Structure formats: structure tokens, C-alpha cells
Image (tube, rainbow, N blue to C red):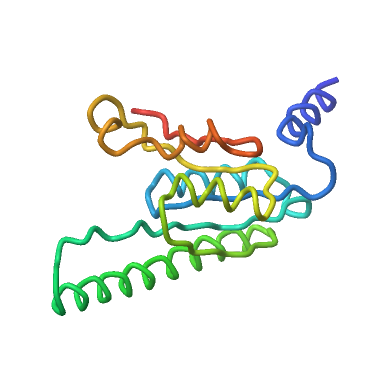
Length: 165
């Protein structure tokens, strides 16, 4: 009886999925993204899941003008791209070491829109993302990527939170 309960709990994540599960893991380099990565490893079976690691670089605000501004924007964009490459490479390695089949993507734009569009085009069956848990003014000013994804995603979404201590 205990074995059947364990099997049922183990398979709860897979209900509704037939065959390989296509998981879009949206990361931003935060500890919340690391928690989302660890949730994928803990909850999914590597042989039955394909993971696409996605990082979105937000567009730079045009705060500099002229030739100097163009140089600064280009330099910052190149640094953002290098950081993004390092981040997705590291996350992909962690997942591959756990036995998952992994692809990576770096896209520019609004994180909310890019995650939803990427999930639609790939097509993902599950989006996994972390939540910063902002409230009040911080949430109003920064917006909630996780909330927008949950509301508009073409598939199921798992939002991973880190418990407050």
C-alpha cells in the first residue's frame, strides 16, 4: 500500500502529460531561478522531459544620446549578452548533469512577452519560473513576470517560491 501511495505522489506532476514533457525553464540569474531549476530536477524524470532554458535580456533605456550613448548602449548590451550566455550555460550543465536533454535560448525584449511567445512557438507543455515575491509598491513598479505568465501562458505554469525564514 505504501508503495502505491509513493508511486501516485511521484506521478502527480505528470498527470495530463503523455510521453516526453517539454519544459520551458525561464531564468533570470536570481536565487529564485536556482530554486526553479532545482524544482525541475526534483520533480521531473530526466528521461521523460526535454528542458529549454530561456533567459530574457530586457532592452536598455535610452538614457545616453549621441555617439557616446551608442557606444555605452552597445557595451552594456554586449556585457548583458555575455552574462546571459554564462547563466544559461551553467544552468544547462546542471540539468544535463542530472540527466536531462537541454537546449538553451537567449532572447531580447519584455520578459513577460518573450516567455509567453517562446512557450507558444516551441511549444512548451509546462513553464517553470521562480517568483521574487514582491508586494506593494515594488510589485506595482516592477510588475510581476510570474503573474503575467500565469495569466497568459498557453500551457501549465509552475511558479517556484522560496519559503521565508
